[in-house]
Each structure stands twice: as C-alpha cells, then as structure tokens.
Image 1 (cartoon, rainbow, N blue to C red):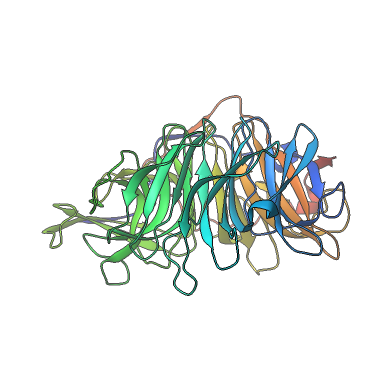
Image 2: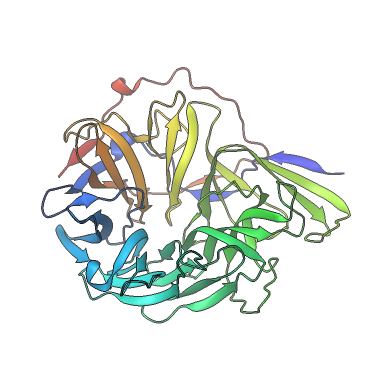
Length: 441
C-alpha cells in the first residue's frame, strides 16, 4: 500500500509574513551617473552581511565587462580588461570584501580559459582561483556559477555532460574537490553554500530509480556535505530536497545557515519513494510526493529516503502565475520573484498573498523617474537587506538596496497534513488603497 501526498507542511521556523509598507529602498547606482557605465542585467547582485554590494557593468564604447562595488556609500570601479577577463555571469561576495566571479580569460589571441577569479571590493589585483582551458569549437568542463558564504567558504562546479568536478574551499586558499562528475553527475546549474560548507546544487544526475522523462537521468537539488574524491562517486551519498524530476525542471536553490533550502517550481513534480530505496528494481512503492507550482522551503534528507516535508510559501492557484529567483536568510525570511496572472505585471514578494506581500511591482516608480519596467532580484542578507536591479520605461537601469525589518520573533509553521489549496483572494484591498513603500537616496 502506498500513499500520495501533496506538499506536506513541516514544523519549520520561518519569519512571519512581511508588510510591503515596512520595506524601505536606497538607490545606490544609476547608469551614466557617478562614473557608472551601462549596468549589465541578468546577473544576480550579491550583498554581504554588512551591506557591501558588487554589481556587473559594461564600459562605454568598448562594451568590456567591469565590476563596480558599493561600500559605505562609495562606488569603486574594478577593471577586468587588463587581465583579459570578459563574459562575467556570476558574482559572489562576503563581509571581508572578498569577491569571486565567473568569467572568460583570454591572455593572448587564440587562448581562452573559463574559470573563477578573485578580487576585492576595494579593487585588488585579480587572481585565479580555478580555471579550465577551453578548446575553440569543443569547450570542455568550465565553471558556470559561483557561491560564497560570509566566512569565505566558496563553491562552484565545472560539470558538463558528465565530465568535470564540484569544488569547495576557502576563498583565501585553494578549492578542494567535493565531487567528480564521472558519469554520475552531468550538468550543473545554480549552486549555493553556507558557512558549514553544505553545498546546495541544482544538477542532473544518474537516478537509481529513473527520472520523470522515462530514462535514468533526472534533475535534483542536492545537498553535499562530505567530500568524495573517488573516480566514480556514489550519487546516493548525498541528500536531496527534490529529486527524480524532468531534466527540464531546473529550480534554483538558496540555502541558509541551518540548512533550510528555498526554491521555486513552475511545473508539478512527482517523486516516488520505494522500499528498498535507491535500487534499480525496487519491490514496493511506499509513497508518491507531488509538489504543485509554488515557492517552497525544505530541509534535505538522504537521496531516495523518507520522511520528507515542505513548507509552501506561495502557490499558483491564486493570482501568482510563474515564479523566478528565490532567496532565504538565516532568520527564515524568504523573498522571491513572481509574475501575476495575465502576464502584465511581475515583481518581488515576501509571501503567498500577491497584494499584502508585494514588495515591489512593475509600474511602481519608487519616487525616482519613470515607471519600472523590469525588476531583477539579487540576494538577501541577515539584516534584511536585499539587492535588485530595475529598468525604467524610456529610462536607465538602477541598482537598489531594499531593507526588510528584522522580525522580533520567528513564526513557527506547524500545520500537519495537507496544505489548503485552491483559495482565491477576492476581498483583498486594491493596491492603490494600501500604504505605499518609501524610497530614499
């Protein structure tokens, strides 16, 4: 006998719902002002625990990639051209001012490397943390994304098509091997890490029980704690939040110090758990867990093992349509990107009610210039500060820090059983009747 479960709710400490009126905003950079050139979109902007920020830019005329840091009100340009660095796609930062970023490096014509490089928020000379030679026409393993916790623990992966490695180490030293690809792991996407070194990675893997596409390959959010340098690592020596999904399901993980992982789904997934677990021909189907589209927080357990529980922060049964980037801090505060039904508005939210929990929405102006047309969420720290990039109708891009008041106490969600689904919000106040969030420069 087996049972099917939809989105179990754990007894998990999370911050209480936030009110949009409690959030304040600080403008820290605008294109073509104070020495800032073009702001490069599409790259999440990190923020350290003490409020340092590093964001990607492109130089005027040449379109060369640069970085800019923001520390205690001062903007500092960090040039990448002298070392031949370009094509930045990921940045990490901590309170000591250490900066790691993923980029290409071409020291001379005809050579191309892809790797993780180091500098500081003060603009120290750029050095190499790890890099791989890329053969033109047949690129091999290469870093895609990098993450750094506040104590300097840094993680990244070079795994492509079963070849490459996951690395972890202190940013001030050299990275160490955490996992080989070796036909067990295939294509890594987003990665995150906490001070304890638990590395959360969204990855394609060879599933002992198969995947949602009918083959052996599946997608998962895995949590890796202990290094395994064996040539053919055992995929079962990991923990997972979600597993067995289609290779097209690619949720981004965000992990906090207690190991809680937040993520979003835009399609329904079903995970089957067997007795015995993790064998090619299991005897008994014990449980099927189904998660509908939404934003979730969970704590990882052993791959293929039960019990599992999930706290659902938001669902798509009301006015939310799709979900994007999700971040969580050590207090359990969760904020996320989402679009609304009708496809006309998107924004940043802090809970399951798109009206009461709205932080910022397309069409707002924050009191500075024309209406905002694009909003991209960055990172969230333990002081409740978060970064985001905006673009305005007929105007320039801007980088902001928002601040959410820290909760005095943590709310504990302890509802047992099934989440109540299907609730529509038909009596919420209109946006124009709500107190407005305030901005300052």
